[in-house]
Image (cartoon, rainbow, N blue to C red; front, side, top):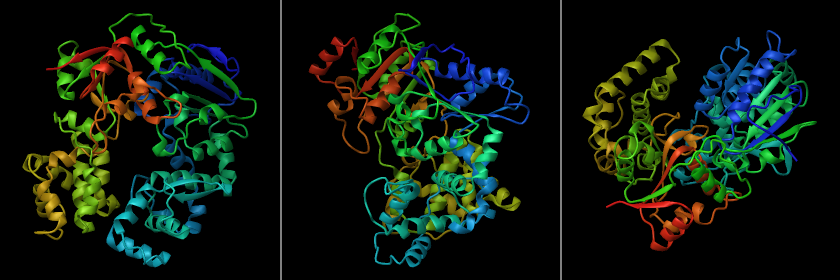
Length: 567
């Protein structure tokens, strides 16, 4: 059984592995900050050159920890797991095994979500892997886009590359052959960082020795979101010298699409590890904590603020109308809307009430088979939308794909000039159909072949720019409307959780509301995702639903949930 502690607890022994279980609002970040300060003040092993590694999964958590820790003398390194592994394992050492994987290590410039999709790349891959019989190029690219590294069940220490679904579309050489095409160009996908990190520590054990000497303490926040490969790496690091500390909540595991597997937190173990549990909820009002307890009877939290507030309210009607109605009751600056789909979050930011869940950027890939034109349009859309959100570094990086990936000063200047033109002339294409932007890019940014007929032409003239722009994924946790995944680790005074049909499907009331009516957090990730959304609220919680039957209205009122029907 875990030892029960509170968020202010100071571990008397910092030289043992530990695991902390805690529900939403329990004070996990507060505990972690206190523990970091404890190490900084009392460790005899940290010394001048040693550092504390702290892995987080959101920028919000990073900023919060850095602000609360204060001056750490450069002895705290906080980052995402991919950034940490790239900086301390892949970048300095991957050249040692590069030849084994056809990797051009001299040309590496970071990692991103790159997926090759050009016609010539597909033909080269077919010839190299002997799979010329495959005719559906769209399915090939879709499969490449879904590839994930995972452990081979027949050889638990060997990593293999496969799509997450059980389809053997390629030969085994076909999967790895695609990766080698990517690597031969000096390109790394985020997921490849895990692969090369694992291969390096397995084949070059001295890398672990160096890593342990640099980081005698290794802390992981939101541990439930880690993947099996990350956990394997963590266990190897913690096998000697380095002390591992992990903090998390099993029921807040919502990143299966990134490889996280529910149950990893509870099963994680290292020699002489001590388990702790933080109970209670410091974040939310009594009514909100009561609803969370109803959804999760296996963890009954006490509302430690002990503040009575209003009942959670489900608002029936249009989501923009729901936001407007809430704004009559609460300060608009304090209202944050959380939704399942990236496109919904972007649409609300633009004041659009459309319910569009077809990924038009993905559809563009199949609509336009001319790779040069398709990439120019897609990367320009992403770049200008990133820039309008203030992500200029990311805008320049993605637009730089059109200009030799910014490898020279001249390339960087061309990229900057192109971005400035896109921003300055935004009004000339943003209110029209995508064809207007295509013509602007062709004339001012990157020349490519024109088009008059065919599927690409039909797509470009029939797709409003405003619709495809909302498909651009928000990179960071900013703004008053976010996806639920981007809200992890944060809290807000007033929350509106938006429910609607997903991925082009019509809204189904019973399915959408099942997380409230028949919750199954242990085995249903969609239920866990909405539990995370509800638990972000401090004082006022609202849920937007397009419709609600009289029977379900009665059930909600019996649960202490108010119902507000809009005109």
